[in-house]
Length: 611
Image 1 (cartoon, rainbow, N blue to C red):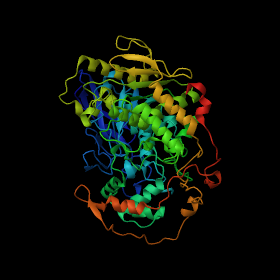
Image 2: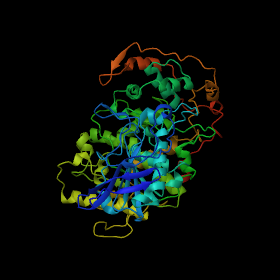
Image 3: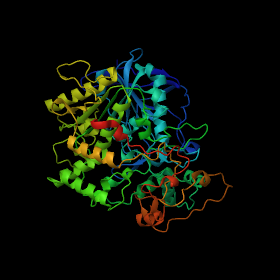
């Protein structure tokens, strides 16, 4: 079994290596496989192209480059040539094993599918084929200029291309091309939810697991993609607002300059508020251009245009714990409520926040408010929407085990006896935080349960098809009358109505204030200031005579990572003054005419008492 394995895929032969799991099980590892052409030169910002064939035997024994990014340690790493995937299989030819495709997190801004966080050692013992992958992050993956050359979502199209490659080739690695489960955490969870509604990916996937992140979360989508692009371009010295000019200008910038300029776009000092400005967009449609998602995620879900597949969805009890306070609780009021700052309604909601979250331990209450607003409320909403529009099972969970394999406390401080963001990953993947780690018998038991639940779902579409000594429970899916969820702690318990008091409070807010007035929406819809004429995007982007692109060096610069220089934040904020901002409740006459039928829907009203 020690002989290096060789498989033949559409592009040629691959040589991998033999690995051994912690329990001594042999598996086959193929790393750094190119699933697309390198997105360099004229392919920057573009949808991925299929990979070229190669001659001879490709060495697939080492992980490929990761996407260009700034790490949590503020270091620039990565290469443009980053579209690689890794395949791990316990058996080759003819095994027809379930395939689990992991989509990494990182806010769509950083991360990779490599073994520092996503080691295959545990999952591979459960007779599944595991695939991990890299995709373009940040500006390189999610710049949108509303032009055919750069419609947006290149990073998600990378993921689609990877799944297409997997579907075409996975049988050679012992996998079943008709049993593909996509799963991911944080931005990876949001990515999986987008894959479940995109016409490009729906036919390719058979099951989905969404962990601590959905397409409803505020971090998952860009609100003003053109404004984001223009701000980035100005940071780099481009004085034109024209999308075509910006495209040409950015093509002339180095990748390092672009990535470091992106770091300068956060005007706030509060870590939890900082956003990745370049995430998924609702693309404008162009003839001959494949759109990943061209309508609102919410509209696609609530109208039932979602993959007809089983799903597992959940979160951790305390997703985000920050040792800092948000000075104005109005920050937590969702933008889609369209409430004015300091209005009577806004101040009433703030008082309710204080009563519900900040009566006792103020720090823990703030952590719960941040966690609910960031992840949990929208996850709960998605589950309730889904159960109204699909007959497929939806399995809901809350992860709340605290043990040696939890990750959050190894990166940031977690003073509470509850699981936090990323903690579930430590019970599915081997990672760098587990080096020289001693685990308890209970830690190992919880890990075994997690692995069994996740792989059972991948195999059968049911995480508990049969009771056994380690899974002595039947996990009931959510239905229209009962919001069942599995609480995963020291024991497994089936409960109903997770965090009922808080979720009921948020449900009441959405019933009262939420109206969907912009469906279907694409990012061709310029944001409108109330009582001002709408911006006609088609006019703005009409073909123009070629002209010289005006550029200017920024007058004030700050060193980033000791090298490239970009403007200081004060200059950026000055440049941003006067830009188009989001309106509150624009009158119907002021809505863009190219967004389809203007309609006001309160989806919660249709859910009745069970919301």
